[in-house]
Length: 287
Image (cartoon, rainbow, N blue to C red; front, side, top):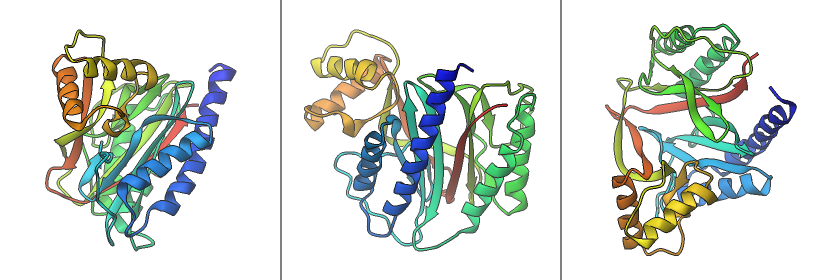
């Protein structure tokens, strides 16, 4: 790996360390989910990082892809299982990390299980390890502790300006023979649940991502597409980041862009049996 690339990854990880420390001070009972998201995203920028994707705040059965909308009024409550998924990039080189807190509690068995499974997986992140070997350790660790992995969610490689690259590392057992290679950057991600172990797409869509240039009728849609491509650097962005467009026109423009396949939408992912979900994730460079 080139020196400049390595330095960018290290800088992104260092900034994410500080962001995580800050985030843990904001996650408490009675706090506004919207204000938390804005504070953490602003902190990322204050520290010199760029936002690789909108702050994900998954509460209880919500596993991923929830970020508050501009009019969100929800607050955190005691015993909520709160997942914070943070993306920081330097010149497109991404640190993708996540942790979970139980509001009002110092620990929770589900969170402890996710953290332990991640730590066991990280021991195998080295050149030559096969994907199935890591997935097996994740599932075995979680089931031995009385929980299930979310089998249709995965850890994944990250690349420059690409959050999800090949290979993926599923949480559940599989027969994938792909081997990790030196200098790959892996966002190893574990989702543990009290439920049956699958997620489903849910509404609304609050996170979008540039796909390709397509002709669209509304000028608002053309404006959003230009922002997605340039201002947001083709990385995922939040609906609430779009300013200066009325709510009705914003919804129409986003719908038009999805229908034209100019944008991809990332639906909220919920555990299918409404089981609680904990997440633990670290970004590491394969050696």
